[in-house]
Length: 256
Image (cartoon, rainbow, N blue to C red; front, side, top):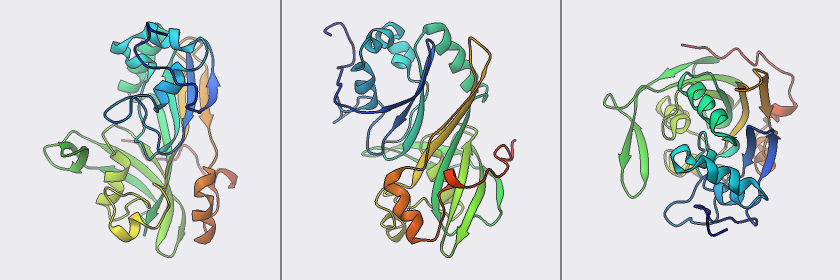
């Protein structure tokens, strides 16, 4: 245990959705930081991963330069799927796949109002800014950022959308949706107060990961259900669970 760079914490519970010798996909609950940082040294997803028997040694072997296996991150209030590398060669191959935009990430979001069009691309550069915490905003000085979206359901005053970020900027979906007048419900940072208080937590869930396995070349498509703590949000607003609805052109997001 003393040789590990991240303190193991088996009390941090998380669900393993997919695992093989090279990779694993885990589901992060809302409110859990992805990795240790200021104020969170042992209650993060990475602490939990290090607390799983025999997994700590694998992640330690990957080292800090490979982020101890983490291939991407989710904001603390966002729930959903995260991809973790377990072997150096697989990790490096998947990092390359992320850089080439070959990994598809899909999110469900409940937003205020709704986009003007049923599907489209948001292409607005995002700049990271340092305040008391890292934040992001639309700025011509920012890095290119692209989010594809499609509207799954509309009701009065809100919509259920599926978003696919084609780039990986800080708070990208939250900032992009707010920029078109459709902030995510429960967003305490970017949404107006009424929208921020309309959900018990951020109504954003990373529900699907699709990629080619770096070793077997098999197409991997991992999915999860609509989170249980957001079901009442749908029900009281007349929205249906998207995981129980018939598939509707799942690959129909507009690309660049």
